[in-house]
Amino acid sequence: MTDGNLPKAILYSWPTSVWSTVPRLCLYEKGYSEDEYVVRYVDITKGENFAPSYLKINMNGTIPTLVVPTIETTGSGVDTRYRSLRDTVTICDFLDHARSSSSASLHTDKPAPTLAPATIEGKALSDAIVAIIHQTTVDPNFVALSARDKKELANKAADGPGRSLSLRREALRRYLEEAKQAATENTVAPKDGGLTYEQKIVNFIEDKLQSNEHIWSLYNGQAGEENEKAFFDISTQTWTEALPDAFSKLETAIRGPYALGDQVSLADLHAISWLTRLVSIAGGEADATGLDTLEPYVGKGTLGPKLRKFWDVWVERESYKKVLVPATAAFAHMR
Ligand SMILES: N[C@@H](CCC(=O)N[C@@H](CS)C(=O)NCC(=O)O)C(=O)O
Image 1 (cartoon, rainbow, N blue to C red):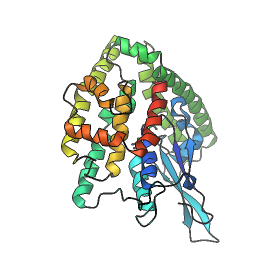
Image 2 (image 1 turned 120 degrees about the horizontal axis):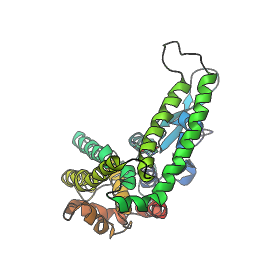
Image 3 (image 1 turned 90 degrees about the horizontal axis):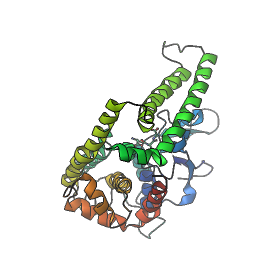
């Protein structure tokens, strides 16, 4: 990725972030060397992803983001600009293309593998698998906060999830004040009659604060019995309906042993990161025993033979040991 004086690409991520592991697996599988990019940490558990400097890079306030330099060839001299790639799918597509099969891989003497599917049929299957994984109903960040009863809620409230919700709340309140101040300082409305950048940031942070407040109040016994019951119900449904449904769709879709067959492809990176996080939320390990710990949560028999085989081949991979094992340990520490 480095070319002459072109600056390095920057990957914004955080060690415990589930979606950050997707591009990190991709970098490893493609054989990029560590001096080809820079990793910058954004502590989402403290709400750093809502800092004004980060929202300029990714206005959705999510990680991962990959910022890649681009050369502007018009104008005076050669100017370097940047492009932000703001979600895992876009980032991995880019990383896959940016290193062709004629370049070497750092980890093997084989050429860098092509992770994109080679056929239209493969692409359709890959997209379908990625869509199953990224459904909001099976979002691992929600699953991590979910609680099926009072006891589970109390345990999580006293631990990492409770701390994180409070820290995000503090950060969001502070950033909201700052954003409101900035909005009053810039009152020049855009020509198209739309909102100023500063006003958009105020609205964005208000939305985030509101959704954080909803779950924070549940965690702090201030949401009332009715909301608490609705939360327990949706949490239970997530484990007993949404997740088993996703597993059954994946069992049908996966070709085996990897998502699209004998070779690792882009869909694998999303699926294994997601599955590993679910195992960890269930208290399991990032090793051959992982799915046995997850299964009682989702119901016996919900993890089919293809998913089990997929897991078995993945936990043995070098990239898994380098990326997902440490990410799981970091997450278990704050769970
Ligand atoms: N669809 C996005 C999801 C990214 C995402 O939700 N990232 C989480 C961290 S794993 C995040 O940034 N959460 C912070 C927030 O939403 O406040 C992707 O594929 O990149």
